[in-house]
Length: 371
Image 1 (cartoon, rainbow, N blue to C red):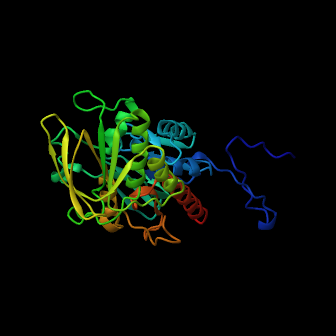
Image 2: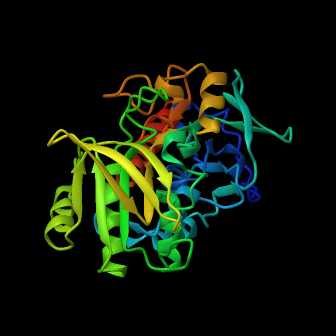
Image 3: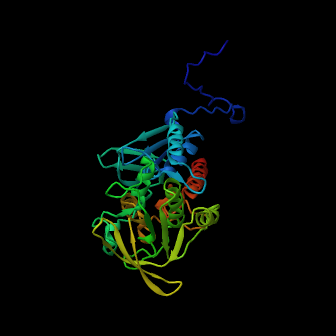
């Protein structure tokens, strides 16, 4: 007698057969897939979501803002190859159109709680609750608020701008002073909010030096006649191609680098900025007038990073999230099933962020395979 044909989705009962003769049946429904909740849809969160979904896991990607990858979309060109930031961002967002990835925009996360039955619960600020097998924090960074350095005059003098504001000018392809004129001289100041005892940030933000070099080159390409100066403590060209950019800036674009800190900035009657500084190589003070003073902002832990790191008990240095160790377990925390990726841990370049997100995805897949 023929066996009754199974309906779609049904499984046969083989309990009467000896165990050795029972066929191995692997049927995985959508509900049976492990669920990974990723908090933060910047480059780290997006890349991790893409890699995890490709391994047949369901991904819930939460973003507090309406737009994804805001820190990336605020950029014009990327170092060291001067590739277009918008092209990269759009490509990553297109890859998120995966059947196993669900993106929740404008969904800030209030806290996450570890439970026994389904491992984790994720609570949104509008009181929704999501279940997850593992959680990945990719809550990223915020730029330093330049108003905290009052002596530099940001928010007081119109000629003092931030590196982010200059990036927006590059995107508009229009660099000008308040009067609408092309700047005849532009000064960049490094380490605003980083390596600074007064503001409590003694760490290096890693990307400010090369960002200033990149922006100085972009400025000279748009306005070859503009004089460009970069004031620095010491230049840390640690990445691939960074030292070459520094040499190109000097040799091809005549960008002048001054080792020294600007102690004070004041407005001039014609809308410019008068700066006081010291050239620490020759040991002499100097004064200089500039049309634009660009403050290179360092990275700080975002509000989301500080909040969730505290609630999960994984607070690291300076409010960033702390990993289990910086060598073999940098994506792990001491909480089982809770992982980290990207600049929620510390300042990183975009290249390192994407590599770290892929590492976190691999660690999560290994973790899920053992559950």
